[in-house]
Image 1: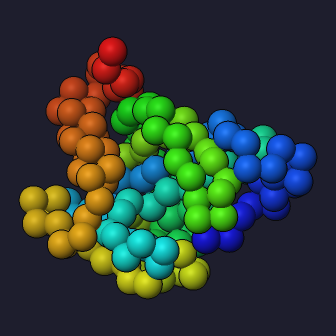
Image 2 (image 1 turned 180 degrees about the vertical axis):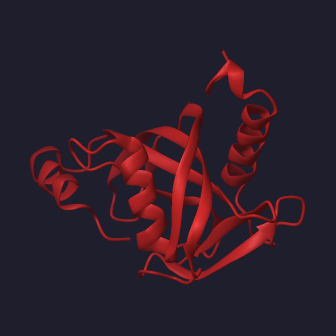
Length: 162
């Protein structure tokens, strides 16, 4: 996965120390209520579209940008479904990061699903109750959060449970 230039600049100063970064994840649904997944090139797992916010970037704009860049699909954000703090992670090069993940429910408005960059080896639409083998547990957790949000949108975004 390419490292965003601003993260590379930070890494020059802090090395592999833990970085706290804002991230976005999309549950993109089509008119048939299928979810858009990407098969990650680094792990082979099927996952939701996600990315890191650029400095000063609005989260919903970043989400729409990431969806288009990674999958070729045009989308709009319908709501902020959940906010989660992910466990710290370590990348193969030793870099450590922890993400504040903003999970959006989005609606596809056009475009053709295809791998848009080298982050994915495949892209596809799947029924939420029939996900492909190799779907990561984070994807299933986020789908459950979005289902809860969609069942009661007036309650607003869900936050991590204590």
